[in-house]
Amino acid sequence: GTEVVWRFKALQNIVSLCARLGRFGDMATQYKALLEYMDKVTRNDASEAINTVLDSASSASDLTKLETIYELTLDALRANANQRLWFSTSVKLAKLHLELGDVHKLQRSVRSLHKTCQKPDGTDDISKGSQLLEVYALEIQMCTLNKNSLRMKEIYPKTINLTSAIADPRNIAVIRESGGKMFMSEKNWEAAYNEFFEAFKNYQETGNSTRAKIMLKYVVLANMLALSDINPFDSREAKVYQDDPEISAMANLRTAYEQNDITTIDKLLTNPSYRILSDDFIKTYLQDLLRNIRLQVLQNIIRPYRCVGLPFLAKEINVDANEVTSLLVQLLLDGKIIGKIDGTKGFLNINSESADEANKFANLNKWVDAFERINQGLLGKLIQMNPETPRTG
Image (cartoon, rainbow, N blue to C red; front, side, top):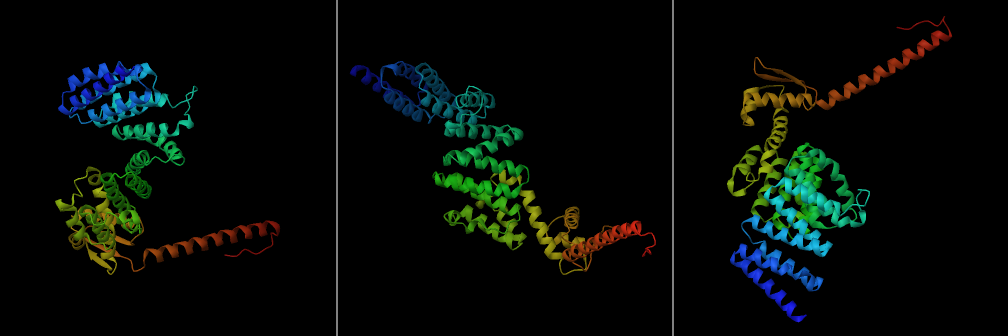
């Protein structure tokens, strides 16, 4: 009756007070007593109390204490068959395992959650699309954590199919961010750019400005690696952050990239106040980015010359002789320049014709060769039909 309800609410307040005081041992004891009243109060009262307690417990500095509270909750919810609350609490516990980096417990939680979203034959129940999306978002983050790229590639398309029907921006943001990182690892820069931009917009929609700013940095990184002409700062969503010092630095980096200004790029990257290199993910792809920029700068430096010294080129882009040779080899192989490297004398000899002209003449030669083969084939058939037909050279 009424006495039970008030006793339940009193225990709820005691549990929350213990959490505020940091007395998590007493909190767990009182919480066990609270959970014994679960079947004696309404489901709404029970759900409200559990969510309040979990929110209070989230302040724990020792995450293992928080894990204990979650496990006590799940045991009680299983006994009371409150499936909806069990699922949301299990998701929170899985996120805690993810934060702790406990892959084994995370796998167990994800497996248990996924099972509740499947049909009896083991296939996904699409009617539970929003729950499936949460499960896959967790699994994708787990794949990122343990670097399981094969499983990531297998489940990523499934999540995209689900997001087209169910738009929960919190989960979509996580999925798109993980997809962007997957494409970055494959050096598929353009696909990564698209994924990061979607993640940025979804984080922005949820009001998570911290993650949105980080995604915008990744957008600029992927955009430059893709050698794209699209400036992400032209978008309405990105302009919101243009006055932020860190984002302003990324915008300046993008401008310097467009202008092939390698000196400004070096200054921006090495200035600690801009915090560009404080992000380990950006740092991972720094060499790829610098190589792309140096290739473009080197191609522009070479353009007016017929013969140019390798030491001069190395000094201009601030690299050693081996690196400048490696860059020149890539330009030659990509057909960006036509010439020969004289390693003995330390010179690059450039042909007068451009790469486009060379390609044009190469295509003309192929065209002439094709006509010659057609001509020879027709002539052969004519000879077979009329042996007296004279041969032409």
